[in-house]
Each structure stands twice: as structure tokens, then as C-alpha cells.
Image (cartoon, rainbow, N blue to C red; front, side, top):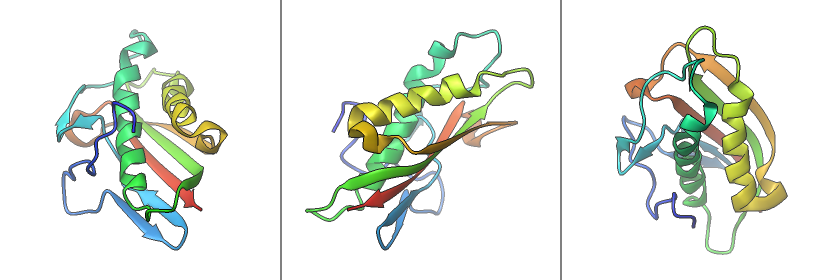
Length: 144
């Protein structure tokens, strides 16, 4: 596991499972950039800020999602493919670099899983996120 991933599932902030499995598909809950249950960054993603200011938060959120997915694998299983990556960005109205923010998540998944870490992707700007998190990430993964 990378240094951002924890051995345990991320701590849910409500009544839900960090990930659910149906057959060979794993669906994660939306994961914010929390470490040990505490947001490492908060607030809106702003147009005037460098997108690199959000890289650590994005990587933490996607690491949480990947950890939640991996924790549902049986001993001999592995994630075969990230099917879908959805990146929600708590951005101001004029922010337009959603794809650049999402690229940090894609890069992390590629570092961890190689080509299997790259699937379809959506980067969506939203008015707010839980706890005023800047980022929330959800994964759908296929298991082999």
C-alpha cells in the first residue's frame, strides 16, 4: 500500500459502508480527503489558485477510495480495472479546470495500478460538499 493509504477503511462520516460489492464489481462511497477521519484540506477550489494546491487533497481522497475498494477483496483477488472514476469538485462559479484536478486522481490510480487504473472519468463542479471538503471521489472497480 502507498503511504497515503491506511490499512483500515476510511472512517465513514455517516451511516454507510465505505464500499459495497456485488459480484465482481466494487462501488465506493464518495471519499473526501480525510486522514484518520479529519479533513486535510477544506474550502472551495478557487479560480485564482494553482490547481497544484489541491494535489495532496485529491490524492488523499482517491487513496481512501482505493483502500475501501481493496479492503473488499478476498485473499487471492485483485482489482482488474478501474471502470469509472468520478471527481466532484467544490468549486467557485468561474472555475474551469476540473479536468486538471481530476488528472491528479488519474495519475495516482495509474501509479498504483498501471493501465488498469485508468477507466472512464467524470469531473464535476458542485456548489458544496460534505464538511466543506474541496474534493470528493467515487470509484467503480472490477475484480479478478
